[in-house]
Length: 280
Image 1 (cartoon, rainbow, N blue to C red):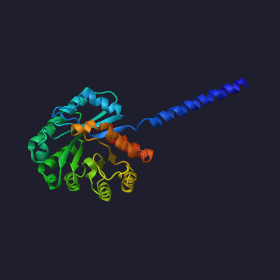
Image 2 (spheres, rainbow, N blue to C red; image 1 turned 120 degrees about the vertical axis):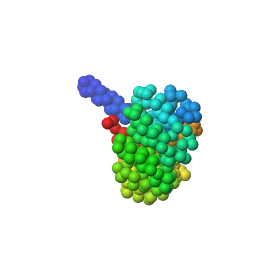
Image 3 (cartoon, rainbow, N blue to C red; image 1 turned 90 degrees about the vertical axis):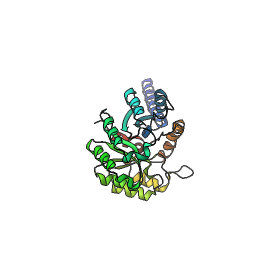
Image 4 (tube, rainbow, N blue to C red; image 1 turned 180 degrees about the horizontal axis):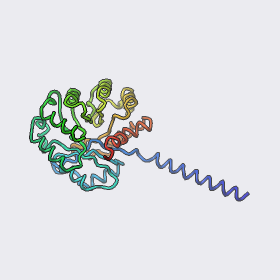
């Protein structure tokens, strides 16, 4: 009889241990891959590298798409080789902030991109700002073809017209659409994703995802359920205020991710980025 009681107690302890493990995992926030991060070196960085890495650990960010203006900040992150963080570096086609307005007609920017690429670790080009027919520039065409030839993604802060022109330059181009059109209606986002299978939407600053009470809107819930493999999250730390509110940005994502089916939430939070940027 005593032996049976002991077996019962032992079995109960195992069950309790398993339940405790499940509970701990459930309480742990979902990991996030930050697919729109700037560690700008101009002006002087707001946070030192160790402070930036501490922020990622604190908020369970386990991967980043790293860019900077100029590319020095990206060099610092990549060459520091921090443990537990996947860093996916992109070439920023800017040296100083005014380049945002002129890069697409500046042949020296194409030289910059080619020189940076020689470092051997870049996976893409961007984030770059490009709107409307400015995308028709010959230098943009050269950049798109260079990206395709070297298996690089493009990270475009663009309206729908510029995205379509980028694809016309080279249908094999793979584009991460920064901010997914900002306030573009959900049905038009769906049309773009349907028409261009090599287009992914990154969701920083994207309006319309939740209502005033923080609840997912029906339109965006339907988009995520229809295209679970086509969305990424990002912080867009383009100014110090975005670094200061980094935790709030990540908490905001987790609040609406919790309203999705777990498998869809995991894809958007980190799975899609991991799949795009798998080791090669």
